[in-house]
Image 1: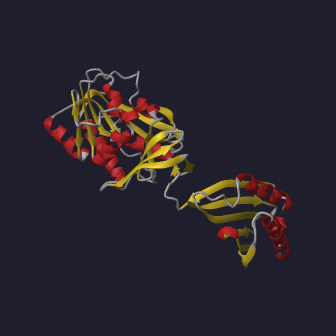
Image 2: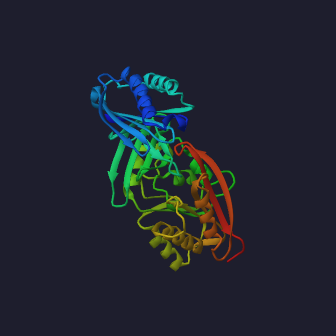
Image 3: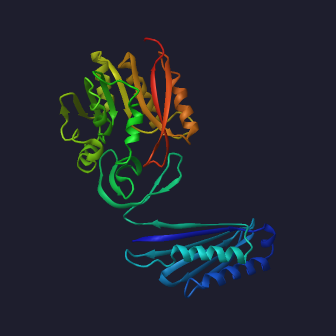
Length: 369
């Protein structure tokens, strides 16, 4: 059940929309095409608007259609209606494509575009966004788990192509098809974790902990604030986390539930040092300057993390999508301000559930602190 919104647009030469007569003829020609597909199409209102014209129609199934012709030659048609769960669509893909093609020929359009119906208002949300805020549509067919904790909205949804996927505050985090994310974050095959002391900041899905334990480290401490995330993943995402979230400790790992900053402060006061610190927390913010609450959090995490690194240790973290060049540059500029100085290495990988290439960082001291 959802409101379906069909969007079609065209571009004609601006000389075709200069006069009132031209606008009237164009809109009449378009209306005639729509009548062949939208039964009982009735004009509700027609008004001149900013050098063009706007028309509102109603038709069967309570559909509302907007036609707007802009003074620069752009024409848009929006058809919106409510579709019940087992109800046939008002217009199927082929019919909508026919409308686009017929109108394009009728108005002598040199460009046209038809979008698949946007599904709005459904309890099953199939839309998420890319790192640079582009709209992505997923083949989500079920909400497996949903709960709002004191920290965030936690969902596990099922995708026909990705399996179960963890979504936090409407941002995709990891799916059952995303082993490449974890392996690239840890640089599997390039780093030696055997007999190493490791800290994970975040990582509540358990995937990084699960994969690191396969490398036989000396000990791994995971610091995760949201216990609900771990419980949900332990039940619904076992293919990526195994059984590591069933208990808060094992032979060579411990999970501490709470604010990671408090644990980092404690490690610093105790003089503890680690071979690897993984930052598996928030993505790099997209902003004009490295300021604000989220940037303050990221910079504080960097400061504390390097205080618990051994001289030859590494800080490993994820960044953002490769398309977010400015935010990545901003993050790297902040890294270069760290003291003692650090060296920055990067890797990238296409992450299936993100539907884009993602950047991962490996950072170490350039000289012993």
